[in-house]
Length: 112
Length: 115
Image (cartoon, helix red, strand yellow):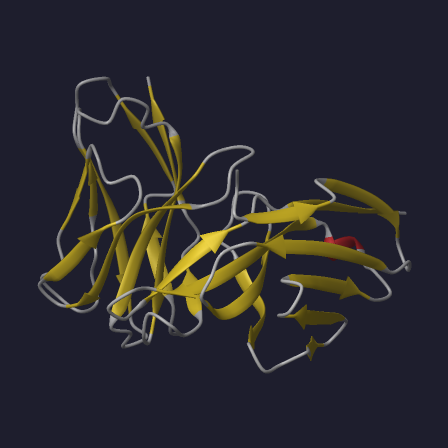
């Protein structure tokens, strides 16, 4: 069945380590996004991509990196430069930037 | 200051009752407004999406209204069920200079439905 799949659901990382969160969609959507959700705050945009091999920084891109080598995949790497990485990370996709966005089930990252 | 303000922050109602959630926004230029439902620990799920010209849109027991002049929206839930317990997030899409859209998220209203 179609949808967006994020993995893993839970992830633990030691300080100083990089970690990559997976996001795959089979909806044939052009646009994909990464958001971060913290308690008491609205979702904040980290990176987005409107087309393969192109991506743009969002509001809080520092300490993160992405790639878009395939239409279906938009992995997010949380680097050691991200000072406060513990959060709930959500991936989304949409046919176009202006149309309805569909979200994955999220990855909860905890730095230990 | 968040450009999309939701109220109340949290709400508890009895099963079977109705409730209305509010969303005020200051962002512009406006493209569309969306309401999402997010269960704890899950990704948001779209309930409605309304453009500038739409005043109301329904999805089952959920009815959203939009007043683009006053920049206000509401989400009305009828005959609430225990499964309605979730966070309801208002999202405004704005048009960016040079094209494209950007989503601005409210912090959500946490709804709990009790027996």
